[in-house]
Amino acid sequence: MNPRLDSLLPYPFERLRLLLKGATPPAGLPHISMSIGEPRHAPPGFILDALRTALPSIGSYPSTLGIPELRVAAAGALTRRYTLPTGSLDPETMVLPVNGTREALFAFVQTVVNDAAVNPAVVMPNPFYQIYEGAALLAGAEPVFLNATADNDYLPDLGAVPEAVWKRCQLLFLCNPGNPTGAVMNLDYLRAALALADQYDFVIAADECYADLYPDDNAPPPGLLQAALSAGHSRFERCVVFHSLSKRSSVPGLRSGIVAGDPALLRSFLLYRTYHGGAMPPPTQIASVHAWNDDTHVAANRNLYRQKFREVRPLLSDLIDVESPAGGFYFWPQVGDDERFTRELFEQQHVTLLPGSYLARDTATGNPGRGRVRISLVASVEECVVAARRIREFLLARRQPC
Image 1 (spheres, rainbow, N blue to C red):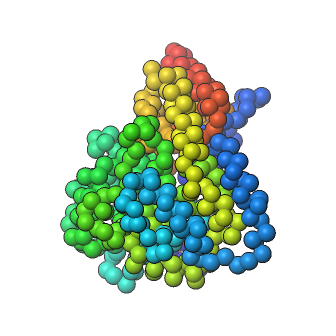
Image 2: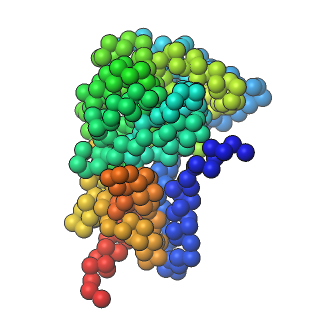
Image 3: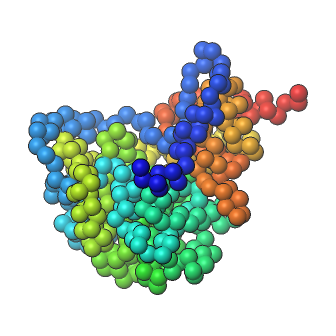
């Protein structure tokens, strides 16, 4: 067996399952899950219709490169979203369809990391999406964690990284907006990261899965492609971004995403995925064309999340620090002992959250997720409100003297 498998830590939801093992919630109280970042809005009907219509195409092998219409649609969506100059994102060489960004994030690290180098490093935020760490370990690299805390506005402090680490860094992961903090990186931050990539010759992988979920239509979070162009990277050198229809269109089961950026990197990534067998099924490709070509349903989806923040936050804000994020669909409040809070809430109110310490790693300055929980506002507006009322009841009961 690959000995590197032994370095992988249990996934957060496996740890959650063990934490809740043996817990007995109140009988008759329906369960509400707010632990997993799985959008549960109704999938747009036109995407389902396109998928059904395209089912006969399942009789053909798909191309890993994807049909031209899909790459054109995805390039158009990113161009509109980030107001990129027309034609700056070439769908022929700068866009690649993937089976969801989870698969792509993992596979991209295997493509980029040269494990023949001396102690290669992959730098990533902490807390983080655990795929970053697992991909680095299995590629033979050392994960280097940058704590994202309230003290640094939940943004990894790039200036605190020793030069010795940057010299062996091969890949920097950024998540914008951040999971689970919701923090947004501005253009200056992204350009600073690019300057470091140029100086020390590493690649930036920007996980932008939550890019279409934000509170103000007049201030969408910027992206790495924008920053690259403004920094003179006309061909997005050293830059690759990851986007998904899971959050954008509420179709997580479609497993449809895109990778875009530096054509030299995508050429190597395409070669890797061709051998890896990562081609997207033809019906999914065809349905995805319709999804990327339409922005109306994305705005409606975004408004549902805004409504949930408006209705849920007032129910909890006088008891815990549920600040509405700059992006994404999570609350990230402090609760004390995060594991105890999660288990007791489940036992008393049958609501499941995720302990923040499960999303982060211990470092010399502590675990930045410890003492927090991630609350995912992924269910319907009505169910999120019910869950918030239960959490409120739980918090008030905790305040009562014994």
